[in-house]
Amino acid sequence: MKFGHELDQTLKKEGFPPEWVSSAINYKQLKKCIKRVERELLGLGLDRKTVELLWQSLDNPGSTSRSSQLHPIFQYSFADKSQLFRPKLIFLVDPDNATLLDATLSPETWSYLQKLAVAKREESKVTELSDDEPSTPESLEEVMNPMENLKLTDTASTSSTSSIDELRQESDTSPEFLQPARIVEVPLMSNADFFELLMNKITTLDMLHEQEERHLEDVIKELGDEISKAVDLPKKKKVAKSNLYAWRTLFDLYVDSDIFFSTRACDRGQRTSVDASKRLQLFIDKANEQHMLDAFKFDGGIGVIRFIQLNEEVLKILKFQEINRTALTKILKKFDKHTALRASKSFPQTIASDPFMAQSVAKDICARISQEIIPTVPQVNDYQCPICMGIAWRPVRLRCSHSFCIRCLVVMQRENQDHCPLCRENVVMQADSDNIDRELVKFLKKNFPKEVKEKQKENEYLAGVDMYGPDFKEMTPCIVM
Image (cartoon, rainbow, N blue to C red):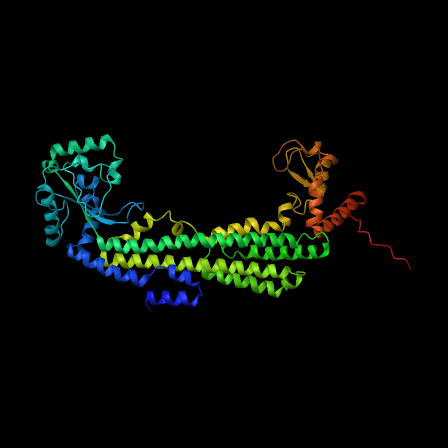
């Protein structure tokens, strides 16, 4: 199946909004433009094989003279994006006979370039190029001295004085090098039509990118506020506690699923839409198997549905972005196949800073989810004692600002360990009951009641072992017969 047809079918099958479909890269229309570009190049005598010969002369600098190495005899470049997007060919030619320096072209190309060079030579005076002079598609820029040619390319514009001196030394032994050279720019109109059409689509996709990102940011803010209210109900503490643990369990499963990104060394980075889709479905299946929706009280389950819908929307955006990037890659490869102009390398570099190429909506939105939704439910991992790895109940904050659970701190003082385990500062033996973080105690009791209760029970048992020895057994409640 041809890619153009496959692209149309995918856009319809995935159920993208109509405004998305109309913004997608029009592969078929761009494909038709390529035929016009090919005809235009043939009219200049630049068939595919001829252009490949030009590239070969640049790929093998050892086979050309020093002058053409410093100033390439052939370039295919794009105008600044702030101006009209105009591709152009640049040739370094001999002004006397219009032959391309250090290259062999077809007779048709020679004839075309000779007409351009002769027409310019007959002008009364040749003006020197200035760096800030804007180029137009109709201009034929020229320079009459090889030394001045250094100002016309990106590599030469930063050349040092020593490079110019080297050229002058070479010119003393090479009379041919002293001959004046002329730069001829050939505007490519069909080429310009192709890339202007492509740039218009990329600009539209950038605008769509920003619009969808703003929409999802609003959804994330609303959902974050909704979850915060569901886990903090002063008049319904049991309901709030149930919702709190339900959301915490759901978020633990969500983070472990690594749906859109992986932080593991074996597969670190952003996932493809296919992989993300499988992982999202697996997350939903596990949530259903564990009956997580049943744990939410009152309207808490509605928030879960909205959270899943948010992730499905992020997945849809990821798919759409991947489809368009694939379309861009394939149309540029087809362009190169018919023209040999290597646009698949130069064009992406030209638009590298565009949001379409440089940013990922999925990455941006997932970052917002991690920053604004998941933190609404405190995670126990953020409040662990770095020594026993349990919840830091009755946390003691040392003078160095590090905190530990009171049980671990008592053990350190008993063993005369004065160094903080994290920063090695001598602060442990100075701590007493005044160092207990009272505000954090209240926070832990409110947000981790189960964990606090278990930690209290564990501390009581360990205190009994300290007092009565290893044979101490946990006390059981008395039974009255």
